[in-house]
Length: 334
Image (cartoon, rainbow, N blue to C red):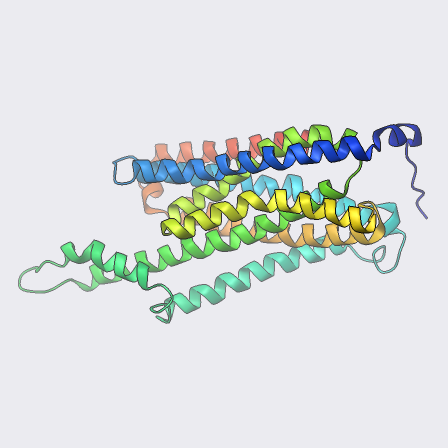
């Protein structure tokens, strides 16, 4: 059986509830405002440059940067934390946790769940049943293309034009679905971070974590914001999604503080570690699937704009690498 050994002297000095509580109250405001900045920046830039020649290319580059951020978040931040939580000596010495790699299993379940949602939504869209739910998109596409329905040699719109318009409509629906599922996966991750930090009484852990999480939320917000910008939601839906992302981590911190205040619940207890490991693994699986399949593969292999311009493909790959790099470096502190 593995033994849990810690530096008790340093741990006692670092465990300061008053100082930790003060740091957490400050962190709530810092993380809230950095989250707003991160997620709003791509959305505002997209709306500002909409209709201009470089708009499509700019949104594509933002989305590639976003894909790098999200992939790094899942593989460098979320998944290792989930593995560590379930590998902790308090958990790994118990049945059934020591008998099977549950982190990998739950990550696989997250991937398959995301695939199932993707398949269901795509089938739903292809079957034509989306007319009621996505009337605004249908109307937008019809309006957009109405000027193109000119007669050619006495014939109305060709079958090729009609198919192209229908494909565009399905892609738009898919982009909106991707943004919504992606936000769910990120919210899982943000809640775990917030609650874990809110329950912690270790000032030595919290102090560097505040600055790291501020940058973390900026980059992760830019990732989600880039997807939201491309999906073209209404102003109300966009504002709601931005607000939900911005308040999730601060609300998680508050929830963690309340749980500790009323129950004295230890964030390093066996049950807390198991919950953190399972939720982290699930959200990691969702984020890995969304980053690789719905963001990277979709843009690099099925985007007509990128396939027609080699330079744009190279710059997009560079944006993907930069997003991954920046987010990976943050793992040194958070």
